[in-house]
Length: 221
Image 1 (cartoon, one colour):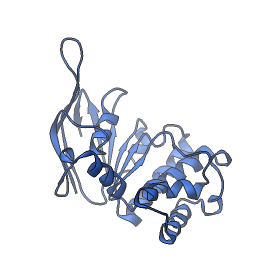
Image 2: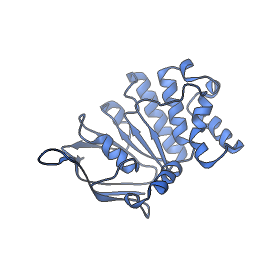
Image 3: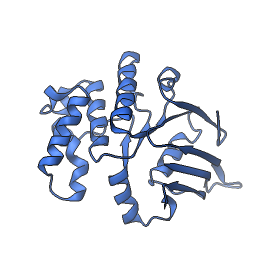
């Protein structure tokens, strides 16, 4: 589904440029999950942002099926993110003034008014993440694990093909991390969504299909 080829990323710096990524390549199939591990500052989040069209590579290419992501204009990239990608971050980024179900529905607003179909999908997702009885609660009324589950439901509302997860359990304890991992796996199977997960947590990473390490700007099995 996605082909990442020889991605490099450099930042201007006095003397030599700062080389964060040095020819990263991998493939990911539909419904497959890939975990990227590595030390802080190794470029994991940079790689995720480039795949998610939030940043541009210095060189290299990314094909999403037949679509060359690095060639997309800004408006087209925004539409692609909204329609084909889901994002889950370490911080849930929920709007405090919105209920759980309203937070899940937020990505739908880019396409116009929220429909009854959108509302049904949001309730279905909250049920899948075990929060059907918390849909009208505000973030301040939810635990840390519950907030992250709302964020995961929000990431799935547009039926994305690919889910990009940046340290999704970084603020959670081991027990809650395991529950989130099992939830990702269930959603992968039920929704046929591919996953790319960045994490420091080896136990969490071991729950998924493939695990690679990003070190000194390159990927290693």
